[in-house]
Length: 329
Ligand code: SF4
Image (cartoon, rainbow, N blue to C red):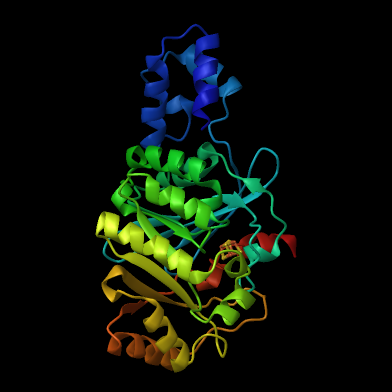
């Protein structure tokens, strides 16, 4: 919901300012429309329904995996595709993965979103509306900015969205903002004081290989990016998550594990998540389970904390950009 538009509409209707707070409170708690807002006069509810769309996004497809993962595809009002996912865990956690841009300009070779044309940055309302969609299904408590787009290229809107998420159920401490190493945004992130988590999508500690699969590495070298991550760790005393997607025969050899362990110093500043690759039609294959296990063991022997991420939603194309690609096919 566009709260600026809501406030303008309420002012035009001669309504007191507190009405905006009432509408937002209902919306953040998962109301499905203005009709549910029983402490608002009926005429006001219908006047708002005419003037302010209940969501800035239109749901165009939704799929649910056997493991409970729900993936949604939306369109903005200028017909830009946006994807978001909700993962349900056995311990009761409900984690959503949201997009910060429609498409992405950074063209990482293994990423379905990177092969799409870049659309535009999403507004804070369009980011929050992804969360609200899932909140209407059930309560949510964790959020990662790992959907379509590079969050640090749209940080003002990402942070504005983060400031609304606690009322939807997701505190700052349970919100993770991820980057492939967009240094200007990362420096801006370090300068703000919300206790958000930082994640770095690293994927190779070898400069040549990293540039090959992630062109952003030519612009902002990994060592500078890691220094910015170390600053965040010094400032918050919280580990920076390192995301490492396991691409079969590309970045999964034990020599790559050694290089990664050497790059991640001091080791206590980082925690590595190894991500089994969900093939996305980009020509890459995922590493086998044994290879991933051996890679994790090498990291652990070197003193780096490393875990293997559970795969979620494989049967519903849950990697970012995949649902859009399927629709386009
Ligand atoms: S991995 Fe992230 S930064 Fe890279 S192309 Fe995909 S969405 Fe963009």
